Structures are given as C-alpha cells and as structure tokens.
Image (cartoon, one colour):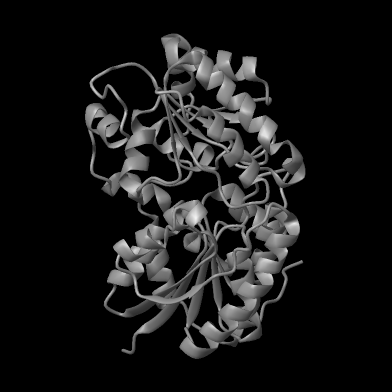
Length: 389
C-alpha cells in the first residue's frame, strides 16, 4: 500500500493549536506522508515568530510562505491573500499531495481551497459550519466550505448548517474539536510552577488568576484601541494576577498592541506575545475566568469548565455551551462581572453547573479525522461537487 500524501496549511497560532493534534496524528501514521506549509503570522516577529514552535514539533515543513503584509488596514490582508495564492500554487503543484487539509475561517484555508479546487486536489476543511458573528471571517468560512470536498465539523449544529448550505451529507463527518485532544495529553503544572514560568514576582502567592485574550473585530476596527483600553482599565483596577496575550494578526491588532503598552509597568499584569501550548493550557486550567473575545472561550473553555467573559460582538454567533457571559465594552461592567465570577462562589458554581462540557467532543477527534483521511476514496465523485438544493 502506497502512502497517502497529505499537505497541511497553517498561518497563525490559534488555528495551529486547533490543527496540531491532527497534524501530529497524521505525522505519526505509518501509511501517511505528511508535510506542512507555514505562512502568515507564523513568520512575523511581531507575533513572536511562531514558526519556531512548529519546528519544535518536528513536522516536515515543505515551504514557508511570507504573505503577511505589515499594515493596519483591510487592503493589507487582501493583498496578502494574493501573495499566498501564488506561493501555494507553486508549492502544491510541486508536491502533488493527495489531500490538502485546512482549518477555520482565515485567508490561509481560503487560498489553499482555491488552489486545490483549480488543481483538482481534494480539500478537507475542519470547522466548517461554524460562525462567529459581526466579522468578515464568517463569509470566508462558508466560502471555504462551498469549495472544500470533505468537512470535519466540531458539533451537530455545524453539520446542520452545512446541510442547509447545500453540502451533501456523505461529505460531512462530525468529529469534534481536535484542540481538546491537547488538554488530555498536556502535562500538568502546579499553580506555583505556572506562576514561576510566567515570571510573577511572588509565585507562592494565592488568589484568582485571570487570562485576557482580545482580538480586533473587522466591523469595529476603528474602536480596537478603545475596546482594549476599557478591558485593561478593568483588570488594572482589580489588581489581580493577570496574563494578557497578544491578539491575532487581523487589521486593528496593532492598535490593541499599542493600548497594551500602557500597562506593562503594573507588576500584577504580564503581557506576552505568545505562550507555548503546555503553558497556555495550564494557564486556562488555573484561571478563574477567560476574558476578551477569543474563540477559546467558547470552543475549549467548556471542556475544562472554565467560565468565560465575552466582551462585545465578536463570537456572538457561536453556540454558548453555558460557560460564557456576554457583556458590552464597558469598563465598569467588565470589572463587576470579573468580580462576580472570581469571588462569588455561588455565582461561579451556578455557571459551572450549567456547562455542556462535551458539546465539542471528548478529546479524541484526531484519530477519527486521520482514519477518514486515510480511507476516503479519491475519485470523480469526491472531486466534482453537486449541491443538494
């Protein structure tokens, strides 16, 4: 039996962490030849050059494509897609994979799906059928789904949405969220060990620990600085140990980073560009709540029964598994909501009791995906799609 050749595409930290367990399982399978293309924010010093983390994971990197144009406008992102399409066309034409594997709703999976479609190579898409609301990413995700040939969905409502979009049922596989696999395999750190790793002055101290991860919203880009400032004013006033992680590379991210620089002088606030996988997972496991508007609050936090505070309109289209409290971009409301979750045991327990812990899977998604990619027949029926409507 000849090995099936699968090419993974990755462009940013958040998507890579979702894809990583699948990449790892593909890489370890004896009947699969797995290669990876790294692009976008992975090759940016502003985003801590996360290509080094991919190299630590010992994947075979077929190409590094620099397509992230430094800028704070939508035009930079659009031009970057054009560069990426050209680069991926050359890479995919040269490597001739059997299947292209992509994740999410960003420009990297869109570019790869376009190239795969024109070169008659099946595209497998993870996290189709999801939605995050008030963002340019939603129509991009659905566009990828209409191009992709194989769908790996994280939950039932994602599968149903794809069917409503006209996708054939035999192309849809409900496998769960692979990033949960990381939470089961991650080595545990004690609270003190974690604080030492994060370089807090008094790692032996106790008390609530907060995690802040806030991204720009394409429909509210001009407000990115102001929104981040309100969040930081709230956590500053509380005086609790707080870890703030840099945003993604979307337009508006430089405004958020600029706002964060005002808070580097506070000893209780640690601002980091990036965290390694084990540190990030242990941070979430030891946090009182996750604050901001990251998809992590909806897709991963329920699995470890972590309350999340979602600020503003980003993520409002996604299903709330019971752990998320939605609030406005208001410093007083942010502060009071954090206090309620971090210090009111009854209120916290009430949230935790309502969490649907396994809605996005049980941490065994990667093996399911690998078996499907290995066994699915690559033929005209797979390559030439027919809408069911």
